[in-house]
Length: 121
Image (tube, rainbow, N blue to C red; front, side, top):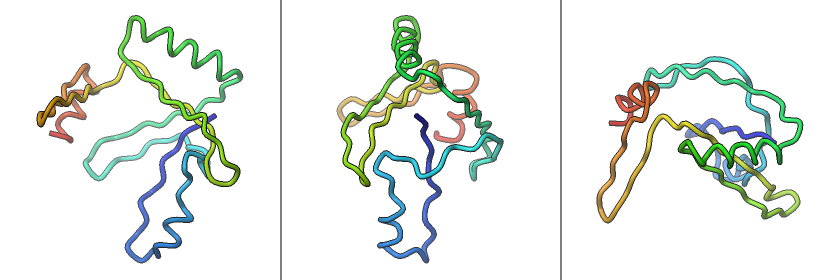
């Protein structure tokens, strides 16, 4: 299992082409390892590693959330050619996003979060 993001379509891309480019959960390509800089000036290092038994890895991730912040999202809905099963999760997030009523707060949780906070504040 893997997760990737798609580059936003440019303005010349037709509505039909943008619709066809949507994956609805099934990535069309694997993430590529490497380094890039966002328009906001944040350097992103991307590492990709194979997972032999994703169920074991997800169980480890869920267990780690007993002592660390994190999340796991999973979709078990599948429809051939349209939707695919996917799972994504992480621990030790750099930021926490909180919302209540009409209020919203972003808090840095670590050094990485303090760097990101400058970009989103």
